[in-house]
Length: 79
Image 1 (tube, helix red, strand yellow):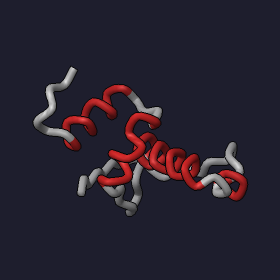
Image 2: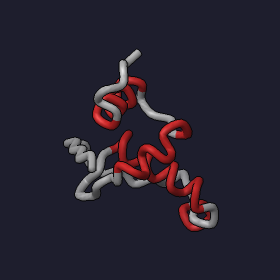
Image 3: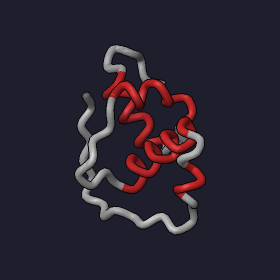
Image 4: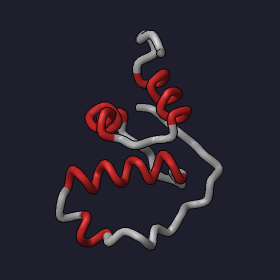
């Protein structure tokens, strides 16, 4: 499991209707992963399997994505 810790305060996301988003489990999971990575984890942890499953669908800061890629696939040559 990849453990990530950021000292960023949690953000209240006022622009997303979470109840509506939860109706589509895949889109909700992608949104949740992006929020956790881009804006901070707080006390939550991200499952490595979830990151790998949705990796190609995540819209992340390029530097964070490169770093996470290094953690998830350490033997893969980084571009």
